[in-house]
Length: 132
Image 1 (cartoon, rainbow, N blue to C red):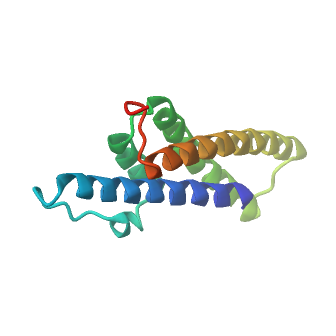
Image 2 (tube, helix red, strand yellow):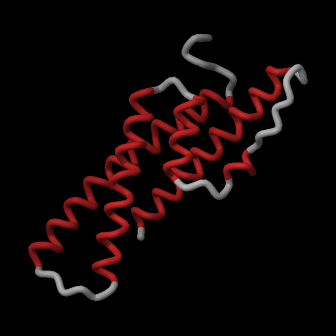
């Protein structure tokens, strides 16, 4: 549940980034081109769709790759944890294997979330690597 909660934080951060990017784009068009996208438009998007949108609005390809890799892991982890919760009999070795797998995933997720928050702060402050 803790890992799934962290994935929710990742999704929330992606939605925030996309919302700020949409506001910046709208401001830059200065009414020349109608741009009516906003954060509400992505409110119910799943992680995969958020990751795809993020890749169109951000140049950090390493972070994009990490998010996509985590997306794949999230789907696998969600299915595996459901099997455990539904009462399927598992042996002690499998529990230990899953524990290690989930611990490593949580570490990767935490690092990725930190990077995404840094990108979010950079965008919110109006700076890009090209402007620095």
